[in-house]
Length: 191
Image (cartoon, rainbow, N blue to C red):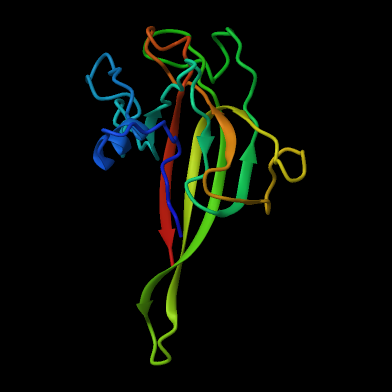
């Protein structure tokens, strides 16, 4: 099974694998005002609350647009939620930030993946299969399923590198509040 980052920036000839991965998985440089922790830190937020993923800054394409969020591996959608349209209502729970009223996108996709790890767990030498999940949060918009032209729904199959979401924003610092281009990714493994 091929596993790739959720963003696939253009690779230059001189770029090492490590440099390319660093660009594809870059955390936002903004920091929480009280703790100075990186925005979207894992596993604890700046407020010392559980934070189930790492914020990743969407890289820009050559034309200046933000790259789309892509599936990290082949899998099956087990949850899809189109995000709430942004607003400036300070009473909306999605307008939270240590910097004042700033919208946090709440589009979500959870993908279930399965792969063999090569280890044998019995005398018949059958490979061990693991199931793992990738969670994509703070999505600004979720693309339609290219095969059905409908919104993604539970049970839909997706392939690695499928372009299925636009990056959104999350409690951004003022310098990033208009870019709205980070996403949060988390994985869990289950046998």
